[in-house]
Length: 144
Image (cartoon, rainbow, N blue to C red; front, side, top):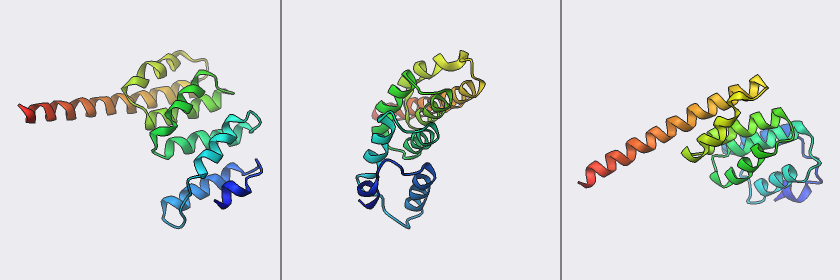
């Protein structure tokens, strides 16, 4: 609550990273307002690219698929190649087989870093799709 309540729009990206790391280590607990506050920063149109990069990365690191619609929207209209790269990476962490075609469109991007992010995301997404197919096949076999 303290972070969201005191956010005057200037929470630096580094502070956000440390909050998440401390929460992952069990030192603090992020309240229900943390991710809505940071996603609001991403959507407001005034947040500098370095902070946008941090937010996009944290959304992927969160492990929460609730952030996928925003990330998918972001890759359709990124503010820079860097934010596109990080959004693609986050979709690779959270997405599913339905994201493969969307991410594959970036394999011919003019920016090599975006192409590399797309390759990594596609590897994750395809690997996850293969694992899910194998799991379904195993479940179907057990049902017979």
